[in-house]
Amino acid sequence: MVIVTPLLCSLGFWQLDRAEQKRHQATALEMRRTLPPISLTDSIRPDTDQLQYRKVVLQGKFLSEKTIFIANRKHLGKTGFHVVTPLQLSDNGELVLINRGWTAVAPFTDRKALTNSTGQLTISGEITIPQAPAIELTPSDDGNELPPRWPYLTVERYRQWSGLETLPILVLQTSEDNQNFIRQWPTPKVSDLMHIGYAIQWFAFAIIAVLVWLRLSYQKVANETP
Image 1 (tube, rainbow, N blue to C red):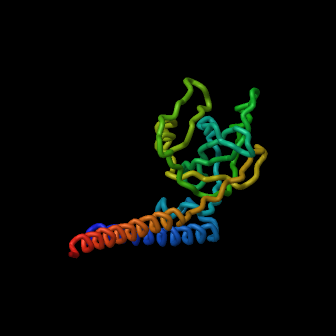
Image 2: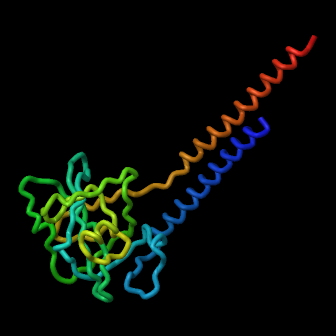
Image 3: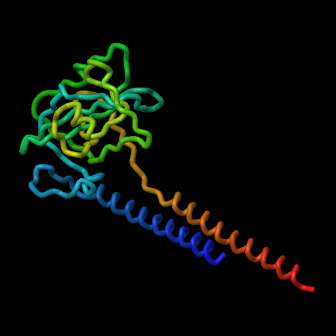
């Protein structure tokens, strides 16, 4: 009891601390959404992690030949894919991946029409950092099919496939254009409920350990009493 109960209580307080960290994280991320749009053309910019969920306005030209599709994406119960194209910034020539939105899979999809967008453009959006799923499978390029269809996107994988040195971010486009892509991006939520639940669990284990000790101690005393 002397060892187990303090250990279980410390785990409970650790989970409460994790919950507090999640609350601070949620507050910080929500504040970023209220800040004015930033520019990626500045010589000094925040670290990549600090760019998460920041609004941004970009000017540049799409490199449509380097478009990829992220397959099996759902919208209102329909299966489709996201169209991701690199944008070359007008000011400094850097490359930024743009998720241009969702479109439905159709037997006669005109891929050239989906990927073709020429001239200088102004793109508004929100910055995110693409992550691989918990169980990571190597995306397939489907042979020589262009654009390739991948199950998910990571910047590292895209760099290897395209040979382009893109910035380590993805911009979810919110501005309208003539491509008719659907851009109803879900709002990520940072919740502390999981850590609260774990904390209650550890404290419950500590109480159980004390009750078991008291019960065994009572039985021992009762057995030793003449």
